[in-house]
Image (cartoon, rainbow, N blue to C red; front, side, top):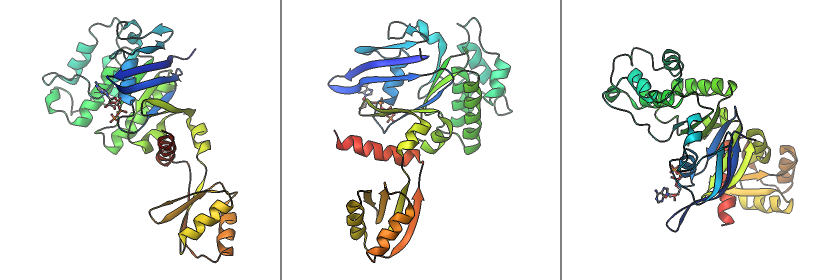
Length: 301
Ligand SMILES: Nc1ncnc2c1ncn2[C@@H]1O[C@H](COP(=O)(O)OP(=O)(O)OP(=O)(O)O)[C@@H](O)[C@H]1O
């Protein structure tokens, strides 16, 4: 049994579909990226999992316990940072932790938590939250999400507002916690960052899951592509089709995949007497793979 099991969830906002038959699992200790374009249903999915929103069909279980709008018992095991946590302008970082720990019998050690999330420096101390930068608030939010020793942490855009060093530190913290067995469900528009972090991906589009895979499975679909600039792109497209290779033209560049290797493509191009101006090999890029996948899904709509 997976730590989190989301099965066939439906959610409508009036006639609008928020989630349609959404199913996926999160295993203990795994870092899962929930990825999709604006309005795809990421926040809706995260809200349903944290019991913040009702759903009309399906089941969500965490550690075997049912989670829904009226049943929050399982949520003792979930920490979350969905959009912005409630941060009180006149409280310090430590006062926030004390406040959020009030209804927990066994909260995390404040000193250790503040150290791990780097909210124990001079910038924090006696300073009130109204003087915090966005990045400082984000780090405090993450500390708050960890206060109950969660088994699952749900982070919606956790890298927002963080500088590169802080993004690096956050990545390290998430990895360390995952190694200790904590699972993460993370959405982010920073796909390069997500690619460096996640074990698994769940891709959502128009409220439907279009792919669930480990990151290496995901990239096994992502065939190596060769991007050419040539003197006659139309001729290259014809050539690629004749060889049954995949071909697209984007911004004056022809992109080919499905051939055995680059040499095979170059030999074929030379044979039709078209000049190659530039060639680049592209592989293993989450953003590009995602865009291709969404384009295919949207065509099928
Ligand atoms: N409370 C609501 N009332 C009506 N429609 C809603 C509500 N919440 C979300 N929606 C709609 O449900 C769909 C999914 O929205 P959601 O916020 O989950 O997307 P998202 O993937 O998180 O997008 P973003 O990346 O922009 O945050 C959108 O079409 C959105 O307009």
